Image (cartoon, rainbow, N blue to C red):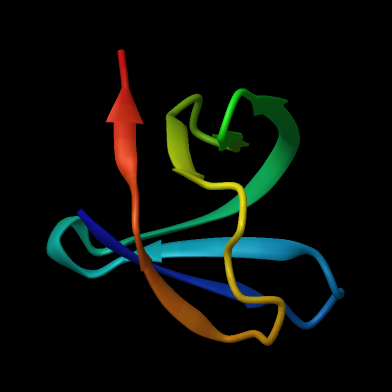
Length: 66
């Protein structure tokens, strides 16, 4: 799924999923192999490529983990 990564007003990383109309703050990040796992405030875990663009906001492909 396509997600947008951006910094919110407080400077924290935030994820927006347009198809779900979901906007959540990232509460933790960890590296697993070639992917970065983002844990959102609602409990979702998203896997994104580790080599994501540094410039925000950006739209990338993410996979939701169970």
